[in-house]
Image (cartoon, rainbow, N blue to C red):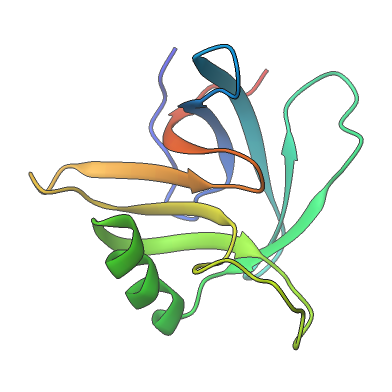
Length: 124
């Protein structure tokens, strides 16, 4: 079931990404608010073993994401990374929301090992 995403982007998202050997991988992430502008992300499942601290993206990060992802990024929840951390990707790891070439609302997850279109879904 597809659900409407909230304005603050908290909720569950199904990610559809190219797989390493299997063609496509579909998995679900969960973003929960912990404080104003602060979130935690984990892959949905019975016992999430890793919860990643996240934050709202800055205006500069949204501009970079717009250039890198090829759609207008209007909001994002990205991973908190200590200052000076080496070997960071072109844009922060996280969930990006924006408008595609047809001005339709779109979501994209830029992840550690896989990237792909995302869509809001009911949390299980």
